[in-house]
Amino acid sequence: MDFSKIAAMAAGHAEARAIQTAVRLGLFDALASEACDAVALARVIRCEPRATAILADALASLGLLEKNSARYSLSAGTARHLVAASPEYLGGMILFDAALWDEWGRLEDAIRTGRAVRDPDMFQSDPAATERFIRAMDSLVRARGDAGWTAAHLNLARTRSMVDLGGGPGTYLIEFLRKYPELRGELWDLPGALAIARRILKERAADVIDRIELRQFDYHRDPPPTRVDAVFLSNIIHSENERDNLRLMHTCYQTLNPGGFVAIKDHVMDDAMTTPASGAVFSLYLLLTTCGRDYSFTEIERWLAQAGFAAPELIPLPTPPFSSSIITAVRP
Ligand SMILES: C[S@@+](CC[C@H](N)C(=O)[O-])C[C@H]1O[C@@H](n2cnc3c(N)ncnc32)[C@H](O)[C@@H]1O
Image 1: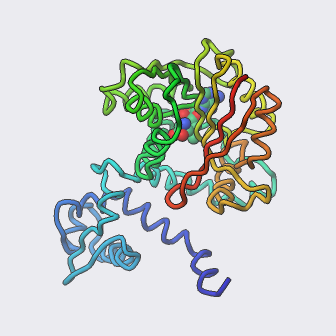
Image 2 (image 1 turned 45 degrees about the vertical axis):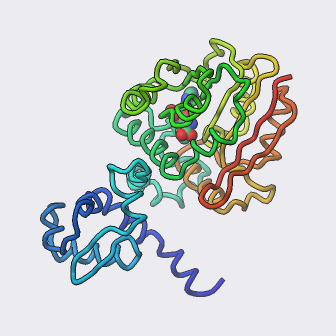
């Protein structure tokens, strides 16, 4: 690897922080309707003009803004992903990342101790943090298109009932129900997350809301209250340790009717644990904030087999933009 690449990576926090700060300040929203110069921009976002120009120039140098005759405007990608009114807004995820700045500053502690640097409570103990977390999942999945891709490629034609376990905002379940009118879905999650899901469903899923049941369920404690044809878990196993993931696979098995299947969507690592690279780096975030990490197909397949599942299959999503895979397995 050459000098420039190493140096750019090592200073990547500056670029990340510039984007996070611009989203927090509403800078992209301020430019959504018309181009303006730094003085006008500073007035709208209530900041100091010279400093605003420095930030806007940095964003223009990164290709996030265009600059013509001292006036700044949005680039096409920025208008699509960084303006709050866009359906593909990534800002929810960016604000969540911004809120974890202090945790990243303690990565050295996590590596030395092997423990998370915050209570690994899945952001459930403070309603504002829960909302930021759940909106981040929704924002990332909608901006990247994971839910649409998954609904198009996971065959649910013979599935009548499904649980989205740890379904969070319900982004996937909404797409599944839209594609399959015969399907009924249950979203099982912790109470704080369910409160946000309820709001999101009202905001934009009026067409399917009568086919979704929200159920309070802690997969560490509760026995499955019902049985269904399919259990979907997206971005769940990466927050749990190896022992709890094996237990979780048993819970999925008990939740399924015979002949039903589980679908696990996550980063699925190779045996060397270095590919995909985004998964290997994401494991650092998981180390900081959870008891988990990203796992390999070999590890996940082993838990599935130990829980009684058969016929595991790996479906990688196309890269880019995706970086995850889906593993399916059947309850005989
Ligand atoms: C990373 S989010 C994934 C949300 C959603 N599945 C997605 O992919 O967009 C993890 C979800 O698991 C939920 N969760 C965490 N611990 C849980 C538990 N013990 N029981 C049930 N849900 C849990 C969280 O509230 C959150 O909604």
